[in-house]
Image (tube, rainbow, N blue to C red; front, top):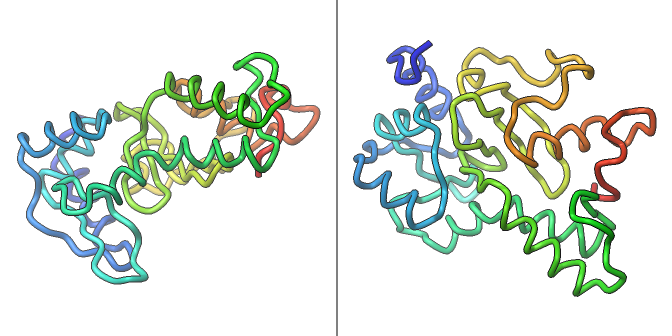
Length: 209
């Protein structure tokens, strides 16, 4: 299925239109999309760029789902959304004993653990916020991650599956990790299966939600 398939784009626009407290404005131009990617350090999947070119989601009520403002009307709020996955993990490093073993041995002091974690997390792909807690990696094959600190869920196996409804429940544990987004796919496997001491993902990290 082509990533700019008009039916798929229309289906994703319909999905956006169904989000609580979200209204749709005129789509973004290519120049606006390029500027947003540069300014916020993200690389949006081609399919999501096609969706945003068709319709631009805007948070319309106080209790609505938060949408990134790629038109720079709320730059601090958008940076908070973009930085949310990393900042949530740093909170878990500080408060909930989270440590990714691929970073090496955890330093004894809290400030040093945070320093090392922040440096290592600066090396992982920056995810694009969709709406609310939903994020996606830089290509169309990325899973859609729902991220709250070290707790990850995959509500859609790819962006297209926001329309079809396929989620992580359709993937058996032996086929994890889901997708191949560096770090984030493995963190999801740890969040979903790693707390089972018999899981092959149990040794990836400690702590977290």
